Image 1: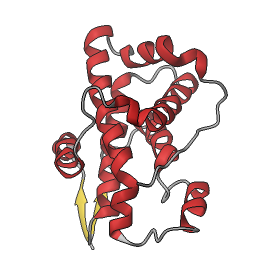
Image 2: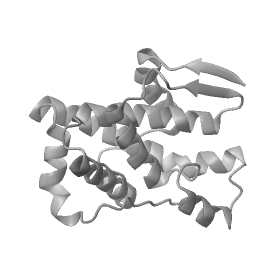
Image 3: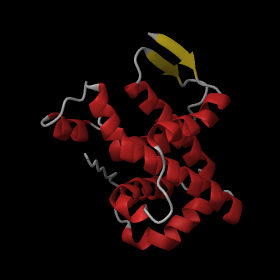
Length: 179
């Protein structure tokens, strides 16, 4: 297996690679992804409440890291060395993202899925991650925009205003939709 050291360039380019592979959520089609977007964003809010000093930028880094991890799940023979990119701030958001939709990280999700599908099949993996990838790409754009509009904590300010009252507890949620 080939190991590739993750650098800033790879972190920035993974989103465009995944957009080419899976596409993106088009304007006006967000309602088709409500359940998945809500689950991912509620996990990010819950995590930010536990770690309020971590800025919105750390969520972008976590999204890029998760997209790279998904790239490993879908590829043959590559592995990434994340050691230079993992930091306390992005690690906690990465965990929140992975808990929301990654059956190779979330054991409860893996158990539920493996009863009905073959997680070792590459085609199945692509189906499992298609919707989460599209959601992650959309959330990344949103985080970038709210940082520009409201500053370093802008995305979390926006989320709290829009849906914060609906998010309770500390337990991280998960969801997967199979087409």
